[in-house]
Picture 1 (tube, rainbow, N blue to C red):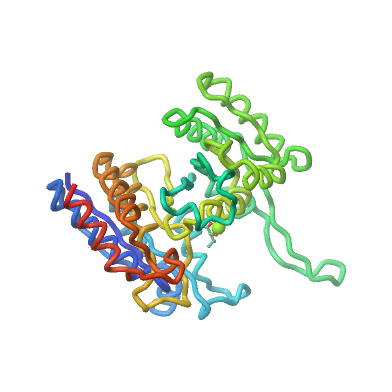
Picture 2 (picture 1 turned 60 degrees about the vertical axis):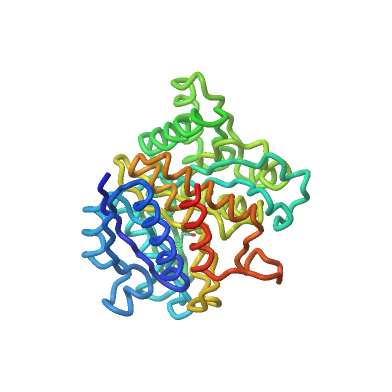
Length: 358
Ligand code: IPM
Ligand code: MG
């Protein structure tokens, strides 16, 4: 198998974790005889510094002509002013839109050995294994009109939450497809008691459920879902939501298991091309120190192999290798609780050794 992979290291710890992950992918190449070609491009704050824009055209061209994209993280204190004209986050949002990546998958599971890192009591954690399916190119993030103006002498900001039935149908259908390979349950998140957009959302989700009789779909209001996520997280299988609710709930979900540094994500569209990135941010406080946890990015690479390249066996090999290094007690500083810890590259080497030993 030959594949072109675009690397977008971005800002903060991005370059370190992406470099470590490339080495893991090279180990997969050696073991399985695949041939991956890597090319590195700019996005985010570093792109602003070097080109004036957060998403240079050649980055988009490179992404479009590749089979998959691996992204580190964007943003940092240097570009933090939320009112600035050009911001790193625009690179991310622009890329999602340009590549039509309408679905964001964020699996959350409990890793053996990391139970004590969770803020939740162990009895609540047992069995947590869920996946967020978040709509990514619509909703209030992109709805028009949006803007800032003076109304009746008052500074006023406004955004529009809008979804049409096609956008809702394709994301809920994708959630059903994801659930079919899991425990066959989908919880659709809305705010149908208040928002018209969300009444349409619930209606269409109900229609999609009828077409997928093997899937059990239920509806839950976003506020009560936020509570259920901390009180009964193990009761969820697949959670499908619009853009903003998914943004919020998936961060809540990410901290449940205490493994923020380990969680991967995939942003997918109609075709095979996807963008894969860890869910944590650019961690500017530890950038350049070689101590960042690369496992979230390494597990994102596993998702890349599975979803964009159909290399399920190789994806499983990476996931098993990560569990093995954790079973062996190896930890980066974020999870070591002050005990001995490995640096970014050392951790990647441990994963590579596990892959090669398997
Ligand atoms: C995420 C992030 C982004 C979002 C930001 C950085 C624009 O929070 O991927 O969840 O809100 O979608
Ligand atoms: Mg977010």
